[in-house]
Length: 150
Image 1 (cartoon, rainbow, N blue to C red):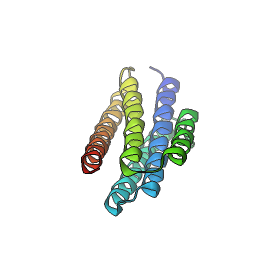
Image 2: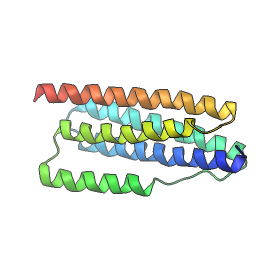
Image 3: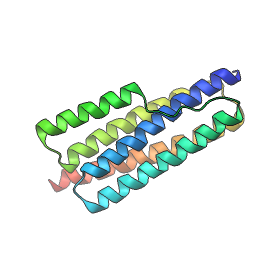
Image 4: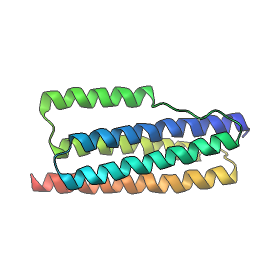
């Protein structure tokens, strides 16, 4: 895989991670539970750190790092906003959408790892995939707890 292809894969992951950061921030704003707000804010900060790490990798490969979210992520957030206006914003529904966003992130990271990435890049992507999986599992557990409480 040449640098251009590697940079393209990394820029896709930057968009995905920026989507996650923005999604977690919006979830934190909408959630009622202070504990859940804190957790989602921390997840947003984790995504921001992942973005910075990926952007640095792109620069080290001589590329221009992505700086924006994806069109599909923007559309998903608009859909969530519309749905919330119609159905109300209970914590379980918000966490459901958060989990759906993390499903997309997992898919993106797994797809990236199907590519023939340089070893140093692969190591970063694998490490970040573990973080995405941890986020997903935590959000799912929080959603299940919210469902059980209602």
